[in-house]
Length: 377
Image (tube, rainbow, N blue to C red; front, side, top):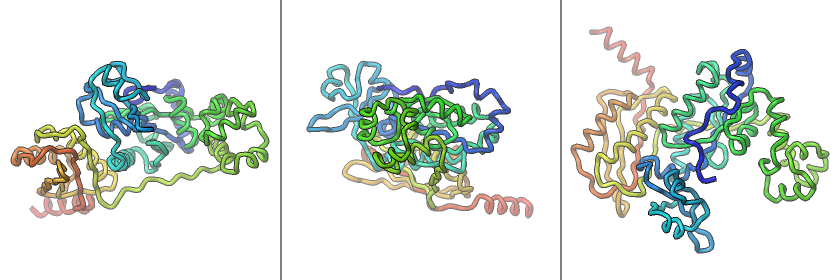
């Protein structure tokens, strides 16, 4: 599939969200939201680029460059994943980009940090996916529908598109986000019935194991569960059986939550290069938005911003901004960024922007200080 829906679609089972009694009762147990970002590697590089420009992400195999991902503009013009770069260029002029794994890692951490505003438990899933334990968040955000909408809008503003699913177990949510995006299950029994009917290809297992199951005549996950557990463990491994148990919630599936770092640092790549100062504003605004989320989640403020504009031949243009007092209001920070860009021209073409903030203060301490100052005047 070449194109994923813009951000993520409305829930397929919207009727399940309208039953307030059922939703409220389910908030007392674990409820997991899985976000799957299949175009993340490309979007990290293009989220500050003109969306109308056709772009593809290239990968090399056996000396041949193929298209790994393409954006909506390229797909609309007939460019397809797995076709060669040469073929794509015959169809339409496309901008060819290569993966930047360091940029992906930094952006993914930033996404995890952003998600912590919706729940205290955010888990890094495989292949650029997030798991959010939203069981305690549904009521706080006025229902599951409102919570999903807030997340949908936030993901879009960050420049990403996501597919999602909601289920009582983390592994089920992750599987459904890839196989049946938009599915929402609040009831574990209904979830089990649906997953039993999924193809064995949806099972998070090794390809070799799936092939062996197929030779046994196993087509559905439900068929696999009906096989003797002892035989499954002996033939496939104890871990394979454990995967089935975790998928259906028959055993506890503890998750390791993402922890915010002690300081903020994030970077945005500009692989097409930028020569005009004001063209950097969109990217810098993205970084300030990430900073604001970080500061909010940790209850902190800052009094200085350390910017690095990286150009040709590893040339680095360092610029610092000092704030009059500790704060986390990005609107006022953006005004200072505009002033900074207006006062100084770029040294060279900029290919990445880095924002680092280590000068951090507890927001409660700052509020007490402000209150004390007001009372003394």
